[in-house]
Structures are given as C-alpha cells and as structure tokens.
Image (cartoon, rainbow, N blue to C red):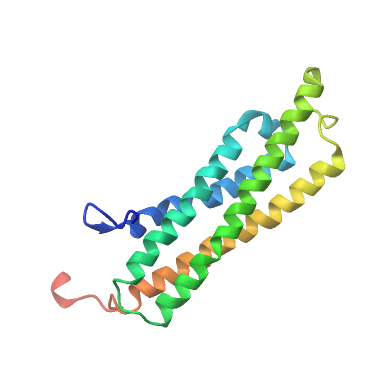
Length: 171
C-alpha cells in the first residue's frame, strides 16, 4: 500500500509535479557538470543527490498513477499515458548512474591533484567529452520522455473536460 490520496486528492496529481521539475533539472545539471568542471566543483555531492531524489520520485509517481488508473474510466488516452509513464524509470536510472559517475570521477581527479581544481588536466579530455555527450543524450531523452508523458496525461485528463466556447453565464 502506497500513498494513494493526499488530503483527498489523488497523490499522482501532486507527485507528478516533482517529476516534471526534478527530472529536467537533473538533466540540465548533469549536462552542465559533465561539460564544465567549474560547474561540477560548485554542485559537488548535490548532483548525485538531486539525481537520486529524481529517481525515487519516478516510481513513487507511477505507483500513485497506477492507483489512479484503477479509479478512472479506462480509455486509449489513459492507457497511452500509462505506457509512456512506465518508460521514464530507465531514463531516471541513467540520469542517476551518470550523475554519480561524473561526480565520482571529478572527486577522484580532485583528490589526485588538489592544487589545480577545475583545470582540464583534472579529468582526461576523452572521458569528459564522453560524459558530456552521454549526458546530452540521456538528458534530452529524459526531458523528451517527461514531455511526452505530460502531454499524454493532459490529453487523458482534459480531452472532454472543457468547452472551447466560454459558458454563457461566466461572461
């Protein structure tokens, strides 16, 4: 049994905001830290910590979404949203693993030569380029997946829930 309702509101509707903010924020932080040692120096342990919180928020949100799915009318839009939502966990795992690796390699390099923190000699250029390219691929992939999930969720929630024409007694 998980968190299904919070103050009478389906928990999924609240948790989804955590994912929508943290996953793209983690992706952006990872890209910056992988590409710029000076950014990694400022972020430090916050990068893998942010990625861990993002990772934890994904199954929390999808579990709450599965509860909500059982309590709404099923249709193709809801099923599509559910399928897309299940595809975010591998992206969140990749963000966490790469964030942790970038942090660990940076930390290891700093401990080897603490007098030249932030210089390109700290981490071998090929390793930094590889990490930067992977972070862009994973970050963009995670961001696109969050967008696709959110778009499908909005369509599922609102497809028949409003009128394009204003209601006459609402001015």
